[in-house]
Amino acid sequence: MNSLYQGLYDDKDMLHVVFGATGAYGCAVASKLAEKSLSVRAIVMDEKKAMELLPKNIEIVKSDVLNPEETLKNSRDAGVIYIASNFPYSEWMDNYPKLVKNVLRGARIAHSVVVFSGNVYGYGEFQYLPIDEPHPLNAKSRKGRIRNMMEALLMECHNKGDIKVLIPRFADFYGPNVTNDLYGAMFRNSIAGKTVI
Image 1 (cartoon, rainbow, N blue to C red):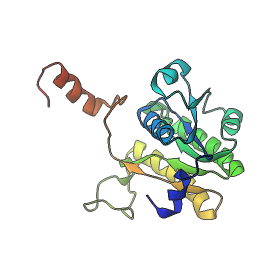
Image 2 (image 1 turned 135 degrees about the horizontal axis):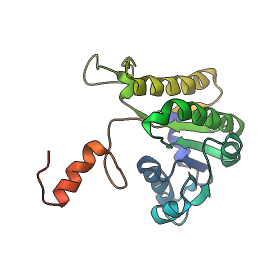
Image 3 (image 1 turned 90 degrees about the horizontal axis):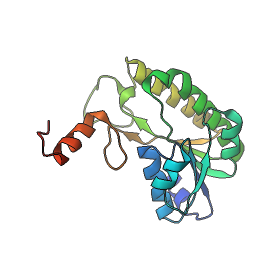
Image 4 (image 1 turned 180 degrees about the vertical axis):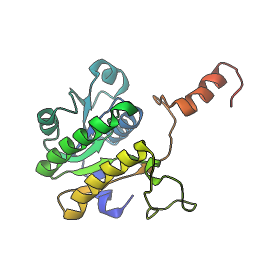
């Protein structure tokens, strides 16, 4: 991790706010932070699911991430804000810009660092391998263009000095609580003793 951000995980009193803490990524982040005895506020839509999935030492807040006032309230005192909320693909264009703008508003007021989980959609067709940070974001797909638009909005604020942004870039992932259709069938078939493709 960039040394600029390393100190964020040394301060036990710093509040880490995870929007979308019941999804695979958000749950993993919130759980790892709690494991390190850091202060965590989990923003969730399904409180019952959150109580089943998340460690007991996490503050759980049921909230609508698309509600600007709720997001502002939930961002109060945050040292780091993680955008882990996700939506069905058909809702990306409508919901992602609202979510990011809501979080940016709260982050500016709280002077928070924002961590946005990036992916590889934005690259489009790879220009070279292995991929590195300066690789062009040439997505032609709708999903890729939306992701690039969100990252551009965040990086514009970062470059202006309004907030600090960290974008870890993940390919498809698997593990506990992941419902990725691409990989899920492999594990389901294996458990059932069926052929794995």
